[in-house]
Structure formats: C-alpha cells, structure tokens
Image (cartoon, rainbow, N blue to C red):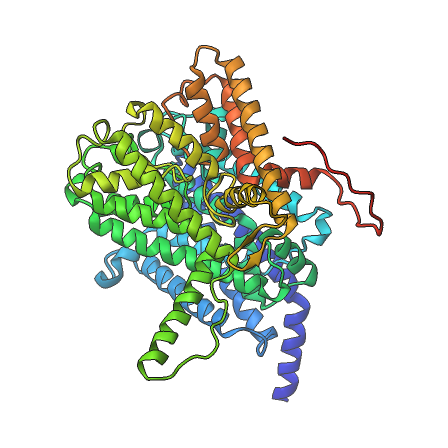
Length: 595
C-alpha cells in the first residue's frame, strides 16, 4: 500500500509539476519587475506592503518548485546544484525567519531584518527558475553573429530604460544621455556625458555596474552557463552556437571554458575589491558601505576595462592621485582583463607545468619531454603586450617628466607613467589631467588606443594579435619570405586576412565617425574629435573633455562607434551577409601591383 501511494504521488507530481514550474517562473519574472520598480520609484506604505507580500509568494513558490524537481530527478541532479539549492533555501528560510519574528526577536540575526535581503532572495529565485527554462538558440533562426549583436543591443536598450527610472538619478536624465551611458557601460567604454558619481544615485550606479559586468562577460555567456549548470547538459545546437561565439574549436570544451571565464572573472574581481578596500583612506568615506561600494565598483570597472569611476575626475581626484598602491591594483586588474580569458587560462596551465617541472628538478628526476604548454596565441599576446607597455611607459615618462609628472616624486613618477601607458589599452581610467598632456603624448595615446587589448578579452581596439600579425607580415615581406613564421610556427593565411580586414574596417569606421562629428560639431578641434572617435571605437573611455558638450547627432555617432567597436565591424558584416558555401573550383592566380 505505501508503494502504491508513492507511485500515485509521483504520477501526480509529474502531471502537474510542469504547470507549477511555469507559474513559479512567471511569478519570479514579475517579482524581478517589482524588484526594479521597488528601487526605481517612490511608493506609498500600502503599495510597499503589497510588494513585500508578493515577494514572499515568489520565494515560497520557488522553494516548492525546487523541492519538486528533486522528487522528479532524484538521481539526475549534480552535487554542485544540490549544494547551491541547500545553501540558497537555508539562507532564504533564515531571512524569512528574521522577518516574521521581527527586528528585536533575535539580536544575533537582526541584521537580516531588512527588505534588501528579501530582494536578494528574489534574485536567487529568478536565477534558479530562469535557468530551468529551455533555451534553444537554433529556434531563433539567427546565426551566432546575429545573436551576439542582438544580445548586446537588447541589454543596452534595457539599461537605458533602467537609468531613466526616477530613483536612478538625482534630477532625471534624457533618453539620449541614458542611451549613451548604457552603451558606454555595456560596451565597457567609459565615455560619459554626465558625472557618474554625482549625477546617479547608488541605485543608478548599481545599474551601471550591472551593465558593465554583463557587457564585459556577455549576457549569453552568463545565461548559457547557468542553464547548463542547473540542467547538467545542453542541446547539440546550443553547443555549436556557443562554440562559434566563443571561438572554440572543440565542442566538448564549450561549457568548461564558460565556467573558467566566470570563475576567473569573479575571483579576480573579488580579490581586487579586497585589495582596493584595504588601500583606501577610510577618512575619505562617510560609511563602510560607501567604501565597500567604491571598491566593488572600481574592481569590476577595472577588470572589465570599462573605465567608469564614481569620482568626478577619475583617479586624478584629490585624495586618490597619490595613492600608488590603489593605482597598482587597478593596473593589475585591467591588464588581466585585457589579456583575454584564453590567455589567462593558458598562463595558469603553464604555471602549473612550471611548478611541477621545478619539483621534479628538486627531487632529482629529469623530464625528457618538454610539452608546448604556452601556445602561440599566448606567446604573441604576452610579447606584444609587454613591448607596448614597456615602450609606452618609457615614452610617457620622457614626454611628461616635466609636465604632468612634475607633481609626482620617485616611484610615483614611474607608477603614474606606467598607468598612463597601460590605461589607453582600453582601460579608460586617468591619473593625470588629460587636457594638459603634451601633443607627442596624445599621439602616443592614439596608437595605444587603436591597438587596444587582446582577443577574447574585456577590452577593445584592433587587438594586440592583429597588430602583431601586421608587423610580422611586413617584416616577412621585407625579408622576401612568402610565409609568416614565428616561434617555430607558421601563422595561417586566414588569420592574416582577418587581421588586415579588422585593420581596414577599424580605420573606415573611425574615419566616418570623425567626418560626421566634424560636420555636426564644426567648432570642435579635429584633434579632440579624432581622440574621441578613437577612444569610442577602441572602447577606451579617455577623452580630452568634449564628450558632455557634443551635440545630439554627435552623441548618436559616438554611440554607434562604441557599439561597432565592441561587437566589431567584421561581426556585423558576418551577421548581414549570407555565408557562401565552399565550392571545388579555383580561378587562375594573378598578382596585383601594390608598391
């Protein structure tokens, strides 16, 4: 009889569980809308109570739906998911326990008697329910390039609408300025038309922080991995689409790579935030939360190479411009973010191999085989990045020694010069007065901004590998070689063609942007306009001070240039043109006169 009742219960749960899961998902989505409205609008006490009541309904349905899944998939749920669910449910129950008992019931958990903890539980519930939905990229009839572009455009539009909420700013913001700020955040650029620190409230700054993080990693990366994490698998079509978007050749490595991306991102951002917090003078902040939020905001902004700061004059602000430890941490964060996730993973792999080899050497065992651990991509990226950083630092130091570096002494001059050479590579922070830079330094920044960061990173520009391939190509031609060879490897022709396509398209987009802004804002100097366009395309965020005073049409131009710079013109062309099937024929080859 008990077995019969259990079977009936299982049958009943399977029959109606789907309906319950959908109800839980829909209520969690509505809960997120109310969550946004809760922060974005001022409400009466009665409305607030209705919101809070609905929050408890969402949480309750989420807990029931999660428990029901365990009944259905008792032997199919990953251990990591079980740990996540147990911790989440326990935390939620403790939060509810604190709310129902009241603030004075238990002093040791009184800090949980706060509506923000309930809203945090709403976010966890939404993530859990959203991750259970069936996302099929193939059913969209869009190719990977189109999906990538639409995902960025959608999050930009959503961000603009969120920034227009009454409580996001102190005095309201126009749609154009909100769109500009959202585009700059999602495209991790850092150009601003209004001061981030004084114009936006903490809620508005939190929206910008969310947009930076989403733009740096990619919304599809986050959504796809969470879906895979909770379900334990993904369709073959989804894996193919994600492999195209991430540039991976091995299909089986798609989700392991996405996991590494998320782990690396959040780990570096966490440690950077801790170090930033410890480097700050507590007298510059009114509360622990202010100091904590500053640390978190600048950690995420630095790693994602966004360049956004809650300080009016970025790190050139009084009280921060001589904090060389803070500047060193920021440099480390945006350099790691600018190297690219594959390079960081490969470096970690090499470090493991290097340590293992040293251990074998110490114990007296010799390794007869030396594997190719640090791949060609990593070697070229690291060499190019090092050369650009060293040369840039030396030139910046020489050019600005008696100019913007005058106020710094000793090691401070070197760190400021290093910062000035590294930040144009799409980081966007500044520790000197940009308008006071020597003309030769500005020209140097043009080159560094245009080159930018490395492939598959949070930065922009034509990328270090593109610049390296172009350099190696003309060196090979000068030596009379028909192939590009480096580190005992030959670079594929498709990489060379892609590199020169990226270079040509970048100059085309930047050139068109300069021409348009010169028409719309004819009174602005060509140097300032060109600097703005190079900064926008390479998603740098540095400016010579004209961004806020641009006309509406010029702002729209910069928005388009930032967007194209982030998604790349080549990706846009791939999204527009239909892919041609390779055919088994070959025309006669003729050589054109080039020089």
